Image (cartoon, rainbow, N blue to C red; front, side, top):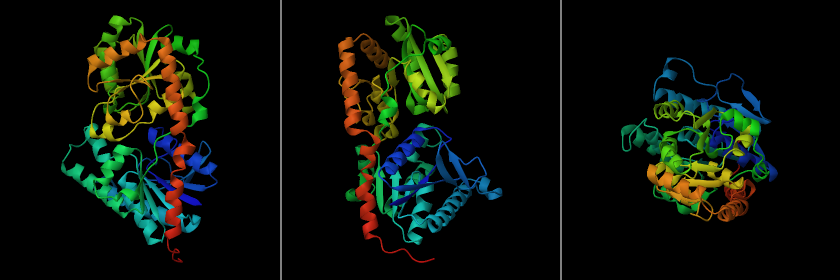
Length: 409
């Protein structure tokens, strides 16, 4: 089977979106399927039509040029036309069996149109609701014109696609509520590359010394810094935590929209000696930072986005046998059972976050070990990429079996 995947972005950018893509592709290759990969124009910074990054080949869609390409709405229309043209070129060249488009709708709609025009089935994978992401980032308001337009476009793609894939039960309920038939939606949950998180932790004392955390109890976060992640809540909780755990420090690995605001908050609150920023680190180096963190903390704020979309990073920490604390938003509840596979605290509540961190740090080491084992078992049994990606098999096969022969061009 040959699948043409259409992504919003890819390597060399690093994000949860990219890591999910790579996990899916690696698993599908293990199944013996052929995969080809094209990306949209928005994050395409280079001129090559084809680019190989870390052994993966990506066909690029060139950015539209000219005055119209700088104007809102016109820019999005031109981008979608460029994606549709690029997909049509690749369908004719590569002869895939299926087009598999990954959200957002600016990718999904042109993919569905190009696939239908050339007689191929199209799978649309919804990884997040982009209108809700815009609300959490403060670029639109729920119910506003832009929100409704984005939501309407997303719903149009869902109805046009031959099959729909999403991440979790909460997202499936949301999509079904938009009129998408239940039997058209398949859940392919986030997962991890288990071997990458199976080595024993070997903290690097020189790295710890350089970062200023040698001998500290380290609370950590590795990922992208967005407002909805609630990292400012963790920073504000640190003085309360240090009243009971004086050697507690925070290690923030990554970067993103909230980076500057977090650094200002740390400076303003006098925490520069106990909150440490590494900036973004190469993917191959991330394991060294995992080894330095005693407790991973995911203080996501409560919102439609965080209730509906399950994150990837807590799964990675659980696979690495690390202790995880997370806010009690609905999506986290699909991953973590309180005091069984991790610890939960009230969202948007600095005091409860601090209280639960102090409790977790002081918990019986035997309970810590039981939680680590249970969390790792959950990942091993339910959240590996081969197990998750196997759910594509009946979706693809059903579409291929019922698709009429494609037209000759």
